[in-house]
Length: 486
Image (cartoon, rainbow, N blue to C red; front, side, top):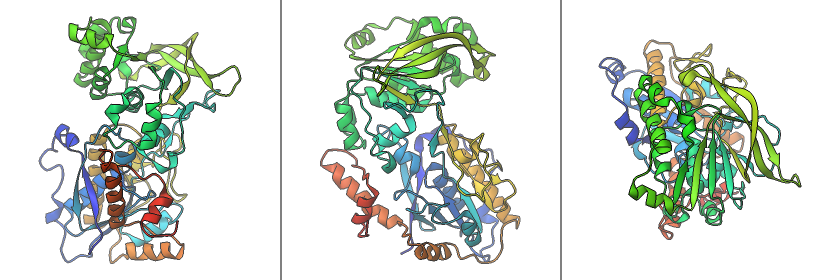
């Protein structure tokens, strides 16, 4: 039986994304000859960008075969490890022209040049695997974590399973005001009994049950008009059981008139912030807030200057914030220091100021400043037959719907080049050549059928606890379950 992979469909994204105008996406199915050599295409990375790119190629070329290589043993990337466990919003569909090969680290186990020699085209979709450092004194103190690592910890990313955050403090500070920051705040403040039926790891749930965190401050260097989170995530925070928001009405002075000129999504988001900060809650909401035992707040016009140590210097005790003012207007406004500072006491600091991609291979161009592979509409500059999609293409911005549209565009460009004869002609060995290379190097890829065995084990373990699954965290245990030497 041919290997299989899953194509992920994010249905809420489909609902929010309008179909392209007629004629904007050619029907490649009718343009490729059935006599030609079936194109062998390789995608590196099995997150949303990788699967959406594969989906487009398979849909618009009737004979294309796509192999997806992934360094983790399991597929789905950000959907499995980056989306909060209380957001199960994904559906799947199968294709017999797509094969998943996990446990293969491109750039270590196999070079990009070797993939290019084996396939007609290679698409790099490996995402943003690192975080932006704060680059301030004290960020190395115990109790300071990247939000990326924290998200990986509660979502079961093997490399973060030993994180062990200490949640015995009263106050946590999250630096950054994007969706990830709100995700982290929501997980910290959600009553554990509300998380018990999600696929959050049991280890993380055990730590959260013992958490003493009662207040979470979400700090941004600019103002309400420049927040990077979306209205959906804000609504969830406002309605979070057992919590009440803290917003300073002074931060919103003059915004009532300003927001009349901003685009509708930003206007709706700012209006919700404004109402939450300035309007007296109704009777029902006031009663709910009166019973709240936990609080969260947005602190604007503050930039981290230093992480403050405890008296013994052994852990974090607070953050020194530089007070800022805006220079410029709208979303392009920049934060400039005023010279004033304030100290915000806390026992936990989570840095959520951005993700960044890493260079994957010396043969692949990489812009370290922007953290992307230089490209034109997904075509890697000066490297014919090499493409990119997702965050490594455009930077860590946008939601899954943005990634879907972006990945479809990369797939469209690849198929245009294939039709125009710009890609290698004649047969390419594809996975057969790569499997031989990996075997000679002692690397045994994990197939999709292997993943299905692990998937069944996770579902079985979760069933007893009433959860959709209990994620396997230890790669060595996963290999043992597959009957391999650890």
